[in-house]
Length: 475
Image (tube, rainbow, N blue to C red):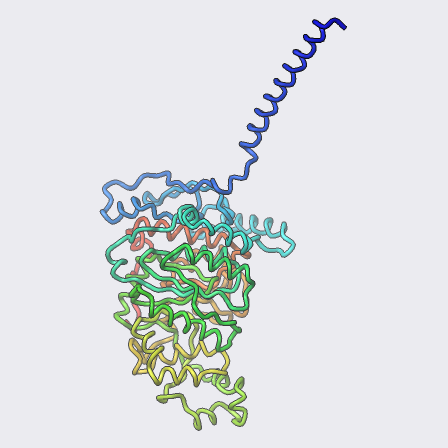
């Protein structure tokens, strides 16, 4: 071959190779842009509507401090003060394309639409449940605290002087689903409050790691220093709360009241609304307390120390409660003043009563209920009634005080479904128990949206509730 022709062939081949290389680089760059994992660049919610005309100084402050909660519906609202919020994919939580305003108005058509969506979603799962993020995902996501707090838009400013002067403490006992626990914490979080988290001592290591990782991102959130292996209806359930209270009473935040809840609860009131309601207690404690003679057998059945007694009456006669405290029944979730908690932890009679009530069935349902009526306890009220409980709404099977459950029953308690939201959202209680994300996550989404609107626009509270704060006999 002619040397000149060979040179031309080599030049042509080299040019072709260079051109193909550039095409490859451009193609890789193009596809990388769309295929790259954008976990660290997830978009956030953005407010689409400006603040109302002539807002109060406090309302303007709330908007300025960007206190919107994540995981909100983007459906429009007819209320001029309700903000339209654009949704972007969250790190673990699916958004549901539903109209929360219609659901809260008990729109049967929209509720049926939600039921259909959820049923279709459950059919995709082998467990027949809505998928919730693994604890490991939550634990890993919260390693970058600054990004996590920013992405989830945790408040950094106290929204009002009234709230700042009345800090609250919260206890959350949980044993599974860190993703739902985080939703609860985000819904009640304010930077001037304090939060004690108690992951069950026998819960999976990844769950405990996730809870600890969340707590490490905040100065005012901590994991209880002593964890109990909680047994259902056992003494360990009561001691878990006591352990958290011991830590809280030493915390630098001088909180006024403590509210204890489980990881499957959710607030029905904003932080400001809780403060205004609790201030109306004037130092009283809110703990369910009623007479329950049919439950007296609980006080000797489980204790080997009292097997010699044929019944509870015989035990009570020979070994009465310290201070002759009268036994009452209630539930585990209460709103307790700092003075009451200090009494429980340090008073000699109270400490003896805590020991006395050990080895009984479900002592947490009797310890607080009995001390709530004990005349020596600060903030006690001897004439409390079953209907006056304000802390937590629980719909038990068989009772007729509240509307029939729309959802399902687990251990005799109604797990809330979407069709029940319009009813429970208008109740006077501070919290709702229970919601299972795996059963109906739309309940969480719509309650979150409602709370966000009332957080940003406090005037909606008095439009939403005809009586606020709700009047109780023991105020």
